[in-house]
Image (tube, rainbow, N blue to C red; front, side, top):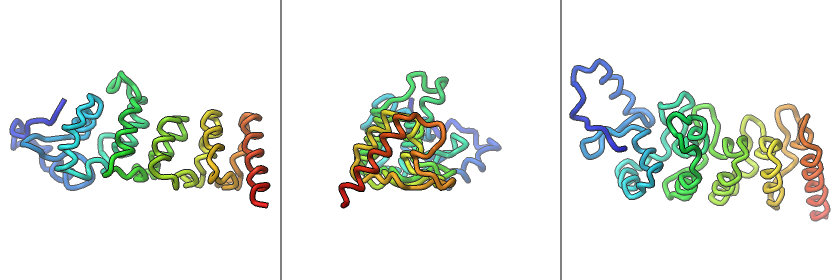
Amino acid sequence: MGGRNSTEKNSTDPGEEWRKKRRKEKFYCFIFKEQEWWFSDVFGLLREKRYAEFEEIVKHEKEVINNLTYENKYEPTMLIHAIEYTKENPHYYPEGYDHSIVEYLSNHEHCDINIPDSVSQTPFYFATVSGNLPAVKSLLARDRSVLNKTTFMRSPLHLAVRHKELVEFFLQQPDLDVDIRDYHRKTPDQIEGIDKDIKKMIQDYRKKSKENKQ
């Protein structure tokens, strides 16, 4: 795994102009040490735990962490790719989800954990929807403001109501807002079809919060 030798490319390649245009937009590829680096090459360094080489790339191309990539139709950031697409693409990532990459990126000084993909889905959105508690904890440790941020008019608690363990974790957070309403004007405990135990946990949290404010 590594960059691709840029001198191997045929100058008459009809796709070269298209590639040059893409290099100027978002993250398609860039040249480093006379090699052409694409998203999969850079991400491969993380998969193989070659962190020193990754940091060398970041030093040269700092925004490589935060740029969107054209190698997926939703144009995710590297962090979103690590959270979501590694487990959805077993052909390319037979090892599946690797939390150490998420932990590494979410703690990286140059990584902005709130940059969304091309359809406004953030890393915290993906972690919450999939019930990925380790990823949720890593992201929340970096930025607590994500706890109550809405995506498509739904709070993280709205998105988590199918995952009991994640709901339990959220309800341990004293600054959680359980009264945010979604596009149907419903709070998380009013969502149809959720587990009765989850509904009761949310309602008990709301009651206790009100009592503590009195």
